[in-house]
Image 1 (cartoon, rainbow, N blue to C red):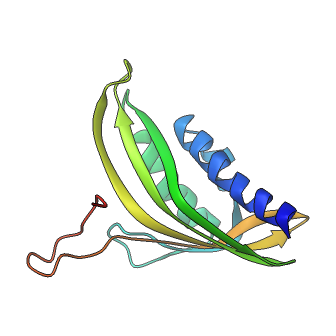
Image 2: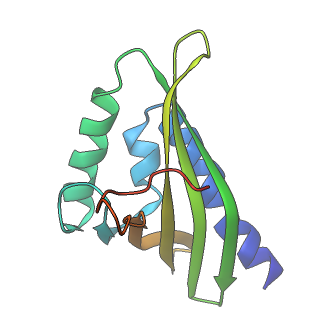
Length: 143
């Protein structure tokens, strides 16, 4: 099982690289064509790769000249032969062209993965943030 866990963990690095390079094709190659995404922003769910790709492309286009750096912390992987899960705290940090931080936020991330032609593909992605009891606002920084 160790080799399966390593290949699942590799998805974190591939995801971060694709986002940094704003490479929608590379990012979407990590997802199964029938992926279901429960994103933390605005829409209840995205059904299928084409719907998710549209959101990814809009996200990348919205970044202007900034660079987006993605970091995964506290990752946990559970894998079997055909199915795996991965969870992490993901930080998205926007940086200027000179490398100065502009803003950042954190989400909780869960991936359900299935093997397709020997490679792990994300079949379900769930991102979330806790909601404060007092103000009902999303908490986008882990304390």
